[in-house]
Amino acid sequence: MKTRHFLQLIAMSALWGGSFPLLRIASPAFGPMALAGIRCALAAMVLTLLMRLMGQSWPARSTWPQLAWLALLTVVAPFVLFNWAALTLPAGYSAMLNATAPVFGLLAAALAGDEKITRRKLLGCMAGFTGVALLVQLGPVAPTPQVVMAALACTGAAACYGVGTIFMKRASSQHQPLAAAATIHVAAALMLAVPVGVAVPTMQLSPAVWMAVALLGLVTSGFMYWISMRLMREIPASAATSAAFMIPLFGVTWGGLFLGEPVTASMLPGSMMVLLATALITGFNPRQLLRKSS
Image (cartoon, rainbow, N blue to C red; front, side, top):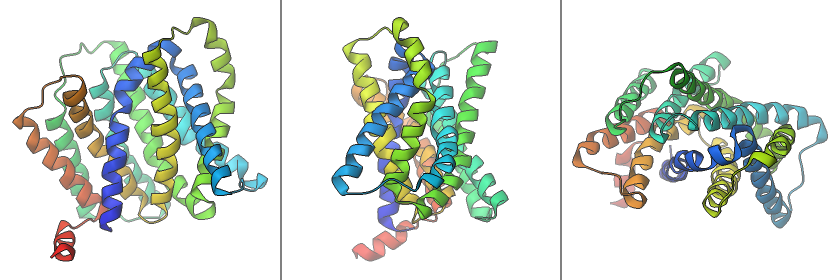
């Protein structure tokens, strides 16, 4: 993996790491399905605008059903599941469970014949889970049925992301990433249009809520989905999903910087394990960077 790809994964993780606290703000106000629909609509708007500015055309109509299926798998289902879980689980729990996505991605890629499961990648998965466990210091939460269901919802969402990356990578080779991302979010917004309309009378809105949903829709959904598809043209799907291991790391960082949450030296081992996991799964060798700079 090239250095720029590795740095892009870190940047994506930094932005996605901020999405889980935002879900905790926006999901109770909009409701899980309505938040997903508004988020998709905002993403579709910004991606369509970018398409017009860059002079790109929509994919062929014959490919829209395939992209609609991809919208259901990688946008609608995980958005609704994470939004619903955010009503119960702290952001750290959701971020940690999201880190299972690379495992599902590896298994899906192996079953599809796109990649081989190597010892290096398995070791990377083990290191990633270890790092996440060390990094995310979660308070005690009673294992009520609702908490268990919310945790299962997060795991299901992570599975959607992991499996979906295989089909995202294939779509990125068949379409322009920007046009495909725009079509996917238009389809997702249409799927969720009715729940948004039904939820309007019960929404509890405020400037903070609108700011949260704007960041979720315009940045972490629309723009980052496009960047993710661009990156998948050049790296394996399992490498792309490895960014999930770094999301809890940045969640802790943003909490310390903006919310005053404690950041201590005890978090360093977990941070190093997370970075090691990403390097193992992606194949990035930091010694290559040192050779280039010398």
